[in-house]
Image (cartoon, rainbow, N blue to C red; front, side, top):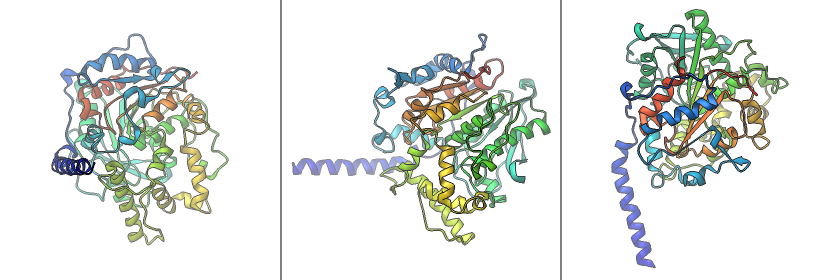
Length: 463
């Protein structure tokens, strides 16, 4: 036994050395632009709702996925035997292995190659062809920094606008964002790229805007859509959102749904939420990428402190949290302890936000924030009920090899809802927002078809 144990230790050391040499190349951002001549286009002659549309588009685009690596589940396949599909069994994965270099290198690599540079203080951003800088007025007299792009005239879809955001701690910098905005602009849409509160140039110009984890952000997204209609004559507005902002966008669609939401009207947090409007703001649909709908399970997984080689995705996120808390402690002189978890970040932002005046303590605010964010309450009945209120097309794209291990949460939620306005595609691969690295042609085929009025799903009445 001792020689075998020693040999195993030696092998692990050798693998680690190889991995260290390989990491700079495979775990840095890369550009995966679309090849428009290879994208599929499927006219929606049957006027399909998003639920049915997702299945049809996946079948049409599936040949673009790598041969032998094209496993997927669509909305109707998320349930089995009267309950949600066991995603881990279906894809032969173990959730505890996904944030591990040796056991899920492909998923971590796909994620890293499609992650925009971390948010920071404002810098001179290189010009984007076809775009100009804008300041977007949103809720609470705030403004968000962004860029507005105008499509080439021959391809322009009159009145069609798409808003694109970023992930938590992301920004508008990098090749990934550039590929997205130019793909949409080339497809004929006006494109508004915005940096949310606490991110990028918005944070640099207005550090007083705290991250609120949904309430203010929902109001901001709806205000941005109204601004496009009022100031730029938009008639059709869509949204592309990633990761945690994808969850916030899903909650925005619920708040902006068929019926006014009264669930939070009795708590102080309710005063920060947007008022219900007669017409939906995002009538062009929402394309949501790698949304961790089981956000409370995810938050719990960030409670232990991780090292880079123990859990690289969690460790990187915790570094960002620590940096932001340390910035507040230095600059604002808040009496905050160092922290690294998601709830440490939420506590930090609470002291910096308008919610500080609404609650006697963060612990009091936390209960209402949990109620707002937690889609899994009462065995996912809360989330499923909220999904039924959504009145615009929503396409949810996630992967089973996402290092955050969110795939089962996707099945748990969307197998219980019946709203035809929601379609889900759950691929085996794609990492966390890493779908362009997995298959750019497949990914951009989904996105361009989803927003083109001739190929897009149609709005259906919620059941």
